[in-house]
Image (cartoon, rainbow, N blue to C red; front, side, top):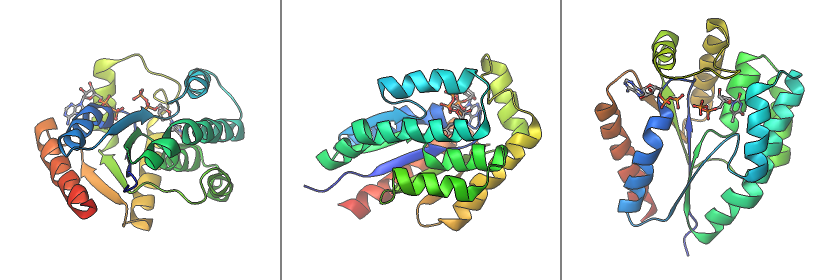
Length: 207
Ligand SMILES: Nc1ncnc2c1ncn2[C@@H]1O[C@H](COP(=O)(O)OP(=O)(O)O)[C@@H](O)[C@H]1O
Ligand SMILES: Cc1cn([C@H]2C[C@H](O)[C@@H](COP(=O)(O)OP(=O)(O)O)O2)c(=O)[nH]c1=O
């Protein structure tokens, strides 16, 4: 049996990635694939409990980074790796690129420390495809302000998000084989067209 593929969604808060998860899951199902849609931090009972703490409590930066990877370790063991081994496809709203972008870029934790955690937690696994929803900060901020009560990260200032976005773009340049940058300033319909094109290509390559 072919092993499944692992797709991650990334971007600064308000870029619009969560809007498109269901659409991509449905596209994959139309290609006859079994899909597991999940998110980070979260995806397991323990991960969701850690998410609650991470999104609402202040803590030391290194504690924050280690808890992100602790939640990820559980997520990999309980959800991601078993699903891929069954041949299912996994789509995750965020994964390790978010830790590099937010804790590394936004909060300036040395990247070498994050690389050490990544080596520990998933030395042999990387996403097959990472969709980076990219928008200028002002667009993301306007979208967020229009919709919801902001959590700990969403309350950060513009320079935090500028550094987070810059680290995402730096990683996209570093790993061009798996990143696709989506211009998320466009309409939802236009973005869906691009996503349909990318997913069709991925499914064809897999056939
Ligand atoms: N392309 C878009 N154009 C306009 N508004 C959008 C677009 N994509 C998402 N939104 C809106 O912006 C808000 C944030 O989107 P969401 O998907 O929750 O962002 P994220 O998951 O990246 O934080 C939501 O209200 C959503 O409806
Ligand atoms: C996975 C992950 C998320 N985060 C942050 C980014 C987001 O602000 C927050 C939760 O992500 P997200 O689920 O995108 O938030 P929402 O449901 O509000 O759209 O956690 C990190 O700082 N590091 C990480 O490793």
